Amino acid sequence: MSKWIKIYFSGYVVIGVIYILIVSGIQLCGTFPILLISETGNSSHIVKYILREDKETMSYERNKITFENIGPSTSRKNDMLTHNGALCPVFEQRLGNNIFQFASTFGIAKSKNMTIILNKNDRINRIFKLAIEVRKDTSVCNSFKVRNEKLSATHDKNLTNFNQKESFRLRHYLQSWKYFFPFIKELKKQLTFRAEIVNNVRENIVKILHKYNNVSSYNTTLVGVHIRRGDIVKSRNWNVATPEYLIRAVNYFKDRYKNIIFIVASNEMPWAKKYMPSDISVEFIQNKAEVDMATLASCNHTIITVGSFGWWSGWLAGGEVTYFKWPAKQGSGLEKRMNYTDYFYPGWIGL
Picture 1 (cartoon, rainbow, N blue to C red):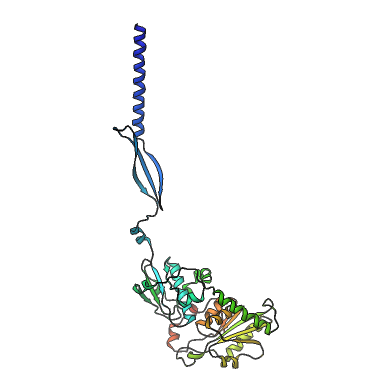
Picture 2: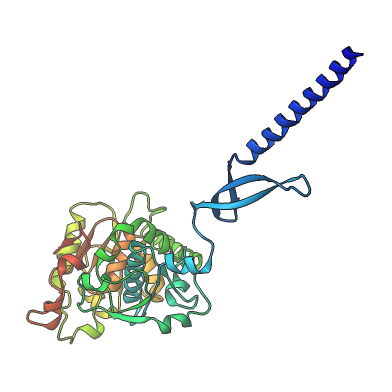
């Protein structure tokens, strides 16, 4: 009898010990923190989960406690704190000036990690297949402060001295390659002529080649020429290129290349036809401004005189570019404001 009592009692002892161990184990687990990573939306949080005993239900639930925020917040407040401002170019004058205004605003925006705002109806968007977003409604630009360029055809460092968290309209001509030089690869991608313009140019080039008995441009050197006259002939600021300059520029390319065809665009064609050298193969073109520019840009090299239209024709073409060396009249306001080093692209040849 006593034997069975001992066994019975020992059984209770064992059961009691097991119960104590189980309860103790649960309590130990209940005080042990488990670190997990939880990703919600765009935010990552290190979350500490603590298991605790629910004494009423004997179940265990997770109490989530945010331990540390290690990612960007999706809250509107924080977005406003980290988001940079925008720049709107103010387009004035004609095509060459418009491209400078776009290109320089594009370069400044890129350098400050800002957004550039363009309207889909802007001429620059109708001519070029821009790789940036354009908008139907750009009325927001009207609320932006205006920053005016203080100098002309010069890199105005003060123009870019502003807080990138703010938004501005940039005004005036912005005619310096230094505004966009670090981003020329991206800029050339932006300044891709639209297909209808390219097709028009291709047809014109083929006709010109056939006229001079060339089947293709493979063995032909095309030199684009832009002669700017018209309104600047009587200008108090600008010198116009002389016939002597055209002779020097033509000879520069004749000395270096063979089988050349010169393709000439001008806003005063009678003068251009009279003073272009006569001992060369030359073709005169007169189309819409964007088609003329795209035609010159499709050439291997370029002769420019003065003005932004020729500047961009040469820049887009690449190759060698000659320019009229002294475009500003001596003692003029333009001469005082213009910095030739800032204006003319590096590597171009002044004659």
